[in-house]
Length: 452
Image 1 (tube, rainbow, N blue to C red):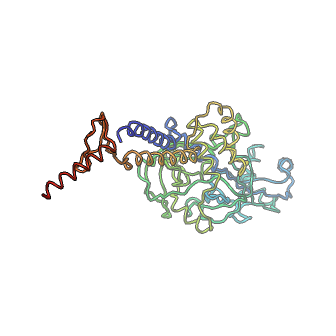
Image 2 (image 1 turned 45 degrees about the vertical axis):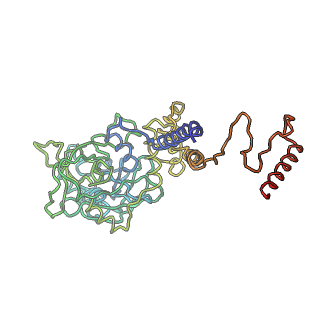
Image 3 (image 1 turned 30 degrees about the horizontal axis):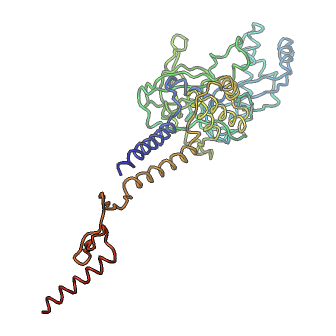
């Protein structure tokens, strides 16, 4: 056994080391510790944050005689536009979006009320252009400028550049009238999404991030494509228990936000939506003061999501994209490229995927080895190694050879017995037949003496 163990034990230890090494290699996961939480979240949430434009086109019939006003309306093709834009977040792979009610308020107004608001806006523009008295222009237009048509439009602009029609599926009420929540629907599939969290769990000073399309970030100096990129600002929950005059709960936070952020998601460290930005604090000396903004809690938002019949579901796009990001950040560029290309196949207009594919292709030669890709091979090697270890141990300790008695002597001879002792009676130097005959004769003589 000792001789066998000299060979089998080291081999068994080596095979066990192979098995341990394979398990270690398979357990290695991409490390993204060099990136801050905010950096990761910004990349995760950006593809699902959308810009929402809600407006009405009003057609006018001018019956007056003021040539300045007629010329002004003629330049506008006797039409004017009223409305605004806000932000929202896609929450289902089939295109449901959450935002504020006041972001899409125009589409819920009566046409006459829309025309009245448009008339006031038009009067202000004319008064400014020709230095007229505003009230005089309003009264003049009310008598001489009638609306003939009002068309309501709700458009959703995706980060990838697509512009889709939005249909209002659930609607609360504008600010100071009720719960400032609306749910829209766009047509499509495999949209990037965000997960709805639980606003009951938020606490004072929790870290949050606000994402959206603030008007302050728009500029004529920027390229048109820049308008598709959302802004993400960090902050904290400063109060989680305030209410509007109507009794609707709101969350106060200190992240910077302004017009255009309305309806944008407020997310926690897990990337879950905990609220939708709804309004800012009062101005001081006519100036906006940052750090005092309010959001509708996500549990209030969920009421309208349920009313709309929507489901907060992730898509395969989300899974592949996040896996690709983790691999890319960890240095596994080849594997990340596979994930990014899979995203492009199922959702070609993903806002971030083209750039990540380009970057991954440039770095693919420096890619680390992702050992978990060889999991099947490792399992086979481990199985064979384990079986060999068992066989070697059984061979070493379970099977022992039968011991044989070895008799070593210079001149071996059978053990003597009384009946087999023969002397060299004829003195020839050997024992032969003659000695046997002599022995028999001696025996007979001795027998006769005994008889006498």
